Image (cartoon, rainbow, N blue to C red; front, side):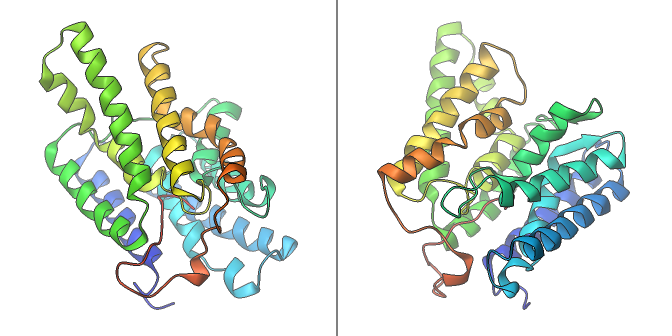
Length: 280
């Protein structure tokens, strides 16, 4: 494959940059060998499942871009004490694409499914939503790189709807509690929240197809995230919300019928209406 001919090449480049930056500038408990385990488990599972199902032609199904993006997303977000847990996350993430389908479309975000799977099935996995802190230059980096990708692929509506809804709810709560606005803005420029908004909740292969359904879906995730975070004090609320509401995609696609996104039919214009996420 030729680098940067496919928009996913940019995402692989940026996610790799984030991983290196996080290891170099943040105190991450990340074992380098676990990154290799995540990459290997995702790619091997993709190849095996593709050969077993033969759901698409060989060139498409064995393309390693998708599992590589998923493995980088797992490496950025998931922490574990044992390599077997990371391997399980990679296997579950990729296998979910082939198992949980409706109308030949998978509706779970692969990396998110892998994270939830090991959080549920093991005792040594965790996610640290605050690992990026709230420094402004991280926010600029994520918005800049994420914005470049979204300009190429479209789907600003999904990110905008999620951030607008969540920001409004957070502002109302901030005023209700009488907190200063610096608390509000520090929360909104959280690196993890921006990564989720720009790279994860915009998965082109698992989110709803039509613009209206994507907006409804994104607002629903924002609402559930707000409730779980502020009333049930779940720090990983965004991941549980995305997992819980993923099946809603099926219903929304039935109401607003729009052709499914395909990497193999992307227009080659710079501003083509395409879509991408952190982990597909």
